[in-house]
Length: 119
Image (cartoon, rainbow, N blue to C red; front, side, top):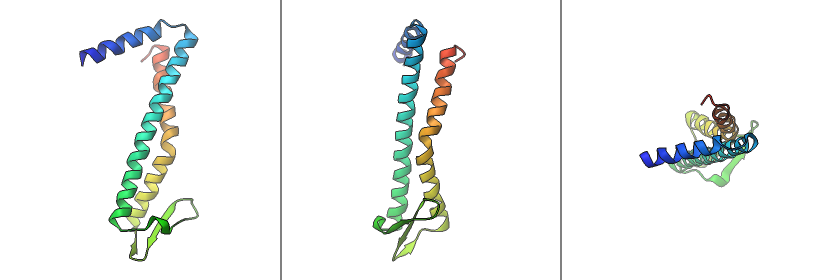
């Protein structure tokens, strides 16, 4: 782990020695990549949980329709998701939809604090 810490410190010093515009661009690029990776991971986890709910209830994903709020409601001849499962599906869909924006704001704030030197 010391090797990783040493490389991170070397990288941090390298960025701090860059001209201010290049340092800002470097921090913004790092923040964008971090937000992208976090968003991808979160979306994959949410999709997997939704797949688990669908599989557990033996639902046919071809028999879904969009409700008024733009969320998907799943039906099947054998049954329907319970109210809790339906709420969970909506919650997972909302997380998947909004996580890129939230992660972008959070990573930009974190890296802005690094850029200003207070991090």
